[in-house]
Length: 112
Length: 321
Image (cartoon, rainbow over all chains, first blue to last red; front, side, top):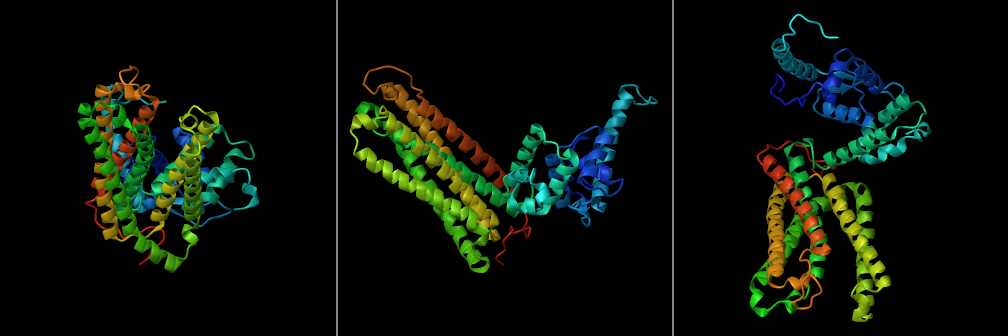
């Protein structure tokens, strides 16, 4: 749930919508730039179908919005609702990470 | 779309027109940027097909939460209509297979299969009535839409509906007339030409029912149905689901009771002979009905989950005010 009480649809760390929101949190991007950025920071290659399926859902929920098209490439940017949904999802995952880290005795260790 | 897209435009055909209009160009640009003239891998083609079909299902409200509660209600009702189409096909096979069952069943053993068979017939009639009522609910909106927007938004599904139904009716009439001129030994399925033409006809009927159902779904999804009409369709979908459960139960009861009292019906037909009581025709019929039933139950569940929803104001792509 987002802070507004609406379901965000963000469930897992490798969910395409979550990856897209995370990428867009760093600034507006078009499809190809999104795909490359996600591959770089998450190691996940989203197929064009999965990427645009998630873009369509996020736009429908007004978590992202399209900007003016340039050279047949339309960039998208995260909205305020999208930022809130991402913050909620990150906080939720952070809690799981904290518990897992503590229970495995990994506190203070860095992850490669 | 520009000529530069020639290599990839075919991949867009999996998506519904509305999606293609909105995202098609940038999707093709992404493919061009990613593959830069190299062939698109098969895995990507397959995932695009899957994503496109999912968008189509989403577009008519079968999956996802697009379109608000009213859109989901309409989609769920149309899902139950699909289930009915499965039952039409399975029911036709059942009707053909089960004809004259009473001739080889001892009079004292006919009560249960007869009651089950009659139940199936009555439920099939009720189902047809429900479909007719659904059509009656939608027709005024359809007529208004034609008056205000013309035939253009509906021309493609209507053309498909017209062509396939005309072909199906014409070939059905033709095959019936032809079969009446053949002797019983030639039309019992053992004469190869009749078998080939019969199989072709069955395939044609399946295509006609599938295309017809797809066309009705395509047309209804484009209509701006009012809340009362959507609610009426949802109620009809729930009634239809119940009817399909009765049809399925009736067929199973008929099959089981006849297998117990006249098992020879499923074999050679000669009274007292043995053989399997699970012939391929009945297995196919049961399997198709089960698929339809699963679809109907999914649709009914979706109807029930969305019946309490508040009006969303979403009325579909073509609004009629």
